[in-house]
Amino acid sequence: MNLNELYRRLSFGELSNLSISSEGSGSIINDKRPTVVLLANEGLQELSKRFVLREKVLLVEQQEGLTTYRLEPMYSIQNAETSGVNRPYIVDSEDEPFSDPVLKVLQVYDSCGRELPLNDRDNFWAVFTPQNNVLQVPNPQAGLPLSVNYQTFVKPILGVDLEETIDIPMVLEKALTSYIAGHVLGNMNTQESNAKSQEHLLRFEAICAEAEDKDLLSISSSSTNTKFEKRGWT
Image: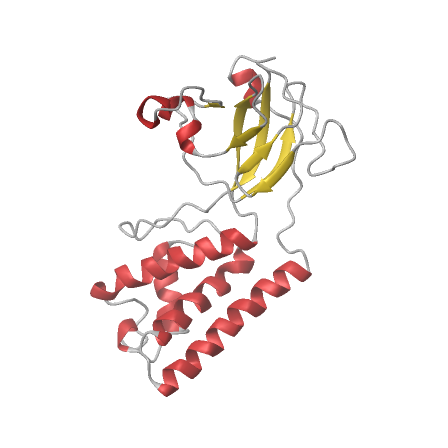
C-alpha cells in the first residue's frame, strides 16, 4: 500500500461521510493530509510495538569490566565525539550509523555466529535484557563483538510523494485505517463521532488480536550473521 492508496481507502471507506474525504471522492483534502500522515505515523508506531515489522542488527564490542550496555545512539562510534562518551561500544559506520530505537532485543549471537541464551539465569553464557534497550552481559569477553538482532519502528511516512510505500503487511492495513479513522473522529468531539471513534478503535484492537492469535505475521529468522564479515570480524 502506498500513501495514495491510503487516502483512497479512507475516503471511500472509514471517512467517506466526512468533509475531510471530500464526501467520499477517493482522496483526502489537501489541508487535512498532514493530519492523516501524523495519525498514520502514530498508528505505525503502535503496530511496530505490537509486532516485529522491522528488524535490524547492531554490533556491540564487549569491553573489559563492562557488563551493562545501553543500546542508544550516544554509545556508538559515530556519535562518540558529540555525545562525549569515552568508551563507545556500538560499532557503526558513517555509511550505516546506528540511529533506530531498540524496542526489543530479539536474538544475540557471539562472534562465531552462535545464538546466546537470552534471559536464562541457569545458563553461564546467557545475556539479559533488564530493559528493552539494555543488554546485560555478565561475563564479557573484551574485544569480541556481539551481534544483536532487535525490533524497531517502521520507517515513518514523509507525506510528500503519493507513491511513497507504507511498509506494513497486508493483514494490518485495515488496522491502520481503523486507527486513523478512530482518532480523526475522536478529535471531532461530538457524541456521534465519539461513538464511531470507539467502533473504529475496537476494530483496530480486534484486527491486532486476530493477527496475534493466529500468528499471521510469523517470520522465520536466520541465525546467519554476515555483519561480522562486513565489519572485519571472521
